[in-house]
Length: 582
Ligand SMILES: *[C@@H]1O[C@H](CO)[C@@H](O)[C@H](O)[C@H]1NC(C)=O
Ligand SMILES: *[C@@H]1O[C@H](CO)[C@@H](O)[C@H](O)[C@H]1NC(C)=O
Ligand SMILES: *[C@@H]1O[C@H](CO)[C@@H](O)[C@H](O)[C@H]1NC(C)=O
Ligand SMILES: *[C@@H]1O[C@H](CO)[C@@H](O)[C@H](O)[C@H]1NC(C)=O
Ligand SMILES: *[C@@H]1O[C@H](CO)[C@@H](O)[C@H](O)[C@H]1NC(C)=O
Ligand SMILES: *[C@@H]1O[C@H](CO)[C@@H](O)[C@H](O)[C@H]1NC(C)=O
Ligand SMILES: *[C@@H]1O[C@H](CO)[C@@H](O)[C@H](O)[C@H]1NC(C)=O
Ligand SMILES: *[C@@H]1O[C@H](CO)[C@@H](O)[C@H](O)[C@H]1NC(C)=O
Ligand SMILES: *[C@@H]1O[C@H](CO)[C@@H](O)[C@H](O)[C@H]1NC(C)=O
Ligand SMILES: *[C@@H]1O[C@H](CO)[C@@H](O)[C@H](O)[C@H]1NC(C)=O
Ligand SMILES: *[C@@H]1O[C@H](CO)[C@@H](O)[C@H](O)[C@H]1NC(C)=O
Ligand SMILES: *[C@@H]1O[C@H](CO)[C@@H](O)[C@H](O)[C@H]1NC(C)=O
Image (cartoon, rainbow, N blue to C red):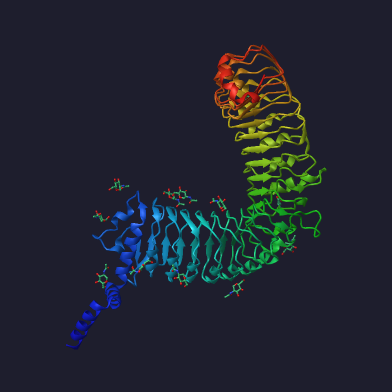
């Protein structure tokens, strides 16, 4: 009786009191109704759904069975997970997301959601996983997300986010993984991030972050990944960072960081797998050891898989890395390493112990001396070996041919002498061979024609003699062939001038070629640059030259051609006339 009266009073009261009416409505709806309405509001903002995933979001089935929706065991009709990843969805994320108050995981990665990340996400106090990466979200990262104090994984990577990293995020004491990669974030890295005591990985590569690394990051004792490359970071690395003994990835490449590396780096970071400081302004570890540009102690970090230090200002010699049996990549190009004298390359003998080595790069340094024959014992896994622009002299060891899996062998711009060893033909995987700008003599071995995967062959700027072997016509993937500036003679083989794959460059200039330009030149339909200038070519230019539809640069001058350019060419030449010289 009393209850009925009370209910009646309430009903009447509520009819005249909107506020209370709303209140009671809400109570009647219950949390499950709130979730249903929130999901419908989220659906309403999804403008493209090519896989029709939200078509199951209809009245005929309970929302806990809707595609991508999971409800809890304890709270049976409350949404605990929303997983709509990789569904090609487009539209915005409704602020109603903030009403799914039992949500633990929100996985929307790999779609095309745009507009802002709704700050209402900050109401999701139970949220543990927030995956928004690889969408088109823009605007700032809402600081309110810092109220999601249970967050463990948070990924905003590959969006169009701007503004600063909210310093409030320092309060997320359970956060283990925080990824911001590939956005347009600015400002400094907030020192408060040093409070993320559970953090194991911080990834913020490819943004516009400025300033120096905060010293406080040295408190992230559990961190295994610190990846801050491709930003605009400056200053020096705070010493505290080098005490993060759990680190296995330390990557700050592509910034403007300067300073030296501590001599005990390999001892304080014993678990390092990737050490990447390339494209910065690091200089050597003087005065500790004048002969070591990198800490000798790196030899103790035996898990190292990649040492990438190219484009810095490092000096000295390469330390003994023999114990680094897992090393796959060693990149040290564009530094001031080596002394320009004999013995500089003796470290290459140590590298023969590195059986996993795939990439070895020492381009553009000061290395002198000769190539030790022991390089033939380098890992057969080696795919790239580049040492262009050093001061290396002597001959190319014939044993080099043992590196049968090599794909790129780049040794241009040294002082190499002697012949091109025919053994190079054993490197049947070779796609790139550059020995240009050396002092090689002898002839071009016919066996180079066995390298049928070659797409780039540069032998220009040597003292090579004899004819072009017609076997080069077997290299049917060649897009660039440079034989310029040698003493080559004879006729240009039709097999070579007619290689239709040539698209970038065919440079035969500054040699002693005779005869006429073969009509097969007309097969070079996609060639951009053709240079046969400064030879002794004669006769009439073949009319087929007009078929070279893509030519942008043509040099025919300083030959004995009869002055008649095929009429089909003249029409097309005019727009580029300054580039067509004959
Ligand atoms: C909401 O919960 C109530 C009570 O548990 C239940 O009767 C009702 O069917 C639920 N509604 C929805 C939409 O799940
Ligand atoms: C989605 O629904 C539309 C309209 O009902 C239909 O034309 C289309 O084929 C459906 N797409 C898929 C992938 O089922
Ligand atoms: C509702 O979703 C179910 C499950 O996907 C589907 O079979 C049904 O056709 C849908 N109903 C409407 C009206 O779209
Ligand atoms: C992203 O989604 C596409 C389909 O939309 C899928 O093929 C691809 O594997 C997904 N990538 C990731 C990293 O989930
Ligand atoms: C859900 O969220 C929206 C937007 O944040 C808000 O306007 C609304 O009052 C919330 N509550 C319910 C029950 O929908
Ligand atoms: C991003 O998603 C697209 C499909 O939406 C997919 O093709 C691409 O591989 C994804 N990229 C990354 C980095 O996951
Ligand atoms: C963000 O957090 C502030 C402070 O708690 C609060 O006043 C505000 O309403 C929140 N914004 C949203 C959109 O949830
Ligand atoms: C990043 O921001 C800068 C400055 O606001 C702008 O010039 C640039 O286009 C943006 N880049 C991207 C990828 O959004
Ligand atoms: C968080 O970090 C900042 C800056 O490093 C510091 O001033 C502050 O006291 C820290 N707060 C907590 C709660 O540890
Ligand atoms: C390598 O580690 C050993 C054992 O901890 C130590 O004695 C040695 O000094 C370290 N080497 C270098 C170069 O730091
Ligand atoms: C290097 O390789 C040689 C020959 O296999 C071996 O005797 C030596 O122990 C290795 N050195 C190191 C430091 O692993
Ligand atoms: C390599 O080339 C030479 C000369 O063209 C030829 O005689 C030889 O048979 C070729 N070897 C292989 C393995 O193809």
